[in-house]
Image (cartoon, rainbow, N blue to C red; front, side):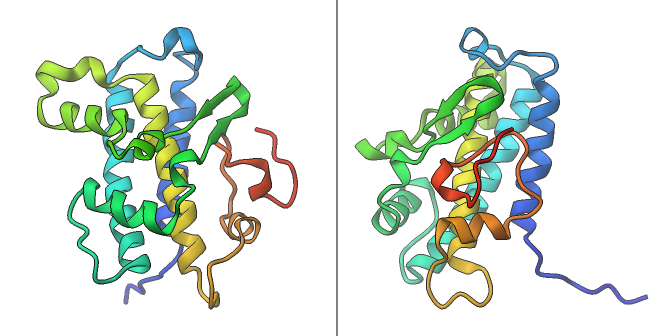
Length: 194
């Protein structure tokens, strides 16, 4: 039997799988400001997995936006991404079910890397000393960052688009839709409620 490779929307599907895991975690820890510093093995899993995928998608997006630019680390991604997507540091992600609003790339407005990214590195490389940084807040922000990058990646790379797709056309192509996290309303043809 031959295995046929498909190009599919693997990064979108991976985001949706992680989002499902995040949604399951909400059954045990209420997603609210009082619990943002709660840390756990599950939040470590989500922080590490989402951040790792951010690294993958950021590299691909940088390659699409500025092929000759170096893209070996988060600092180089920041230079390419903020030059080509200037509104990225201000881009918000919403978790309407819990009344949360996240701005995962806000640190990039001041040319520093996001707090959740630093925590990801700490938990990844020195978990014994920094496990308490595997928090709900960092997991949510890493997931929100992943959503924004996956959105932009497909905006620039979906087949048949000679120019970047409009935000609404991009989200229309990302099916099935996300069930927990949303981009701003003006990124959808109809108002979404999760």
